[in-house]
Image (cartoon, one colour):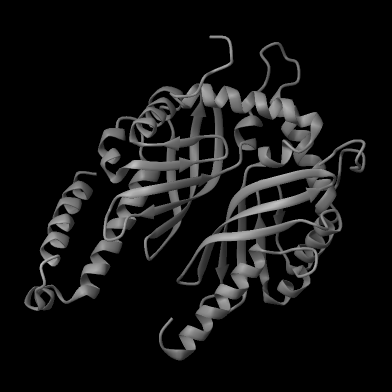
Length: 361
């Protein structure tokens, strides 16, 4: 981290010098392209450091956030550096001192850094392992982040919460929700529950490179923005070894994906997704989005993020994963609303220093 801070200072000095018109200086460092490459390298280091911060390292990464930093995850909304500081200390130092996050894949385009990650540790003594994805937005020509959003599933934590007296806890709630979802959309799934119903669950160089880039961008966006009318058009773009994952479902062939989408949209005629921010670097497409509509009678409005990987140099998709919070869907189901609200209140009390906790102290 000290190396990153040193690099930050050097880069700031470089940018200050460049603010003075000087063709000679640009020539000495290799021109503006060399400066941009250096900036991108340092931004990747900063993004990775912010994600992988552990107990004892918070003070070192705070300078990379702006005073007006805005942060969001499926439960928490943070505004300002003081709020962010308190949140990080409560989350990492108090609630999850053994938390470890490892970056898996990352992209950087313009001022937007995106990364997938695996998080392991415990939350207030509850062990869990979660996969997620994050997006960071940097100020222009800066190493400071003014916006961050983390996407992960609350279900990964809720699935580990049991009641001390042995009665069913949130673990059972998550089991039934995930099982009913699999029963609804996964072909040939050995369902252990009655069939779902509204009474049981209201639930790139040169012209060729540019052409490929545009095609990959179009296919990636299509795969994220599927709806009841367009989903069949994406199937031909799925490679024979294609696999798909979300917080509940794992799919490993294009044929199974077609069955999955057919089942999903047969129950969700008005479900649609709108892409917000997107990046495409080295055959990897990432996008943030908001999904709205109705699934099995449950009204949903859920933010999320997706990663789409293409076979190198082609428009064939070999892998995609959607990150979203199951809680955003569960709140649309009357029987599940109260447990989700209770869990979110418990989480906010543990990590948000500005939250007016409603739980007994």
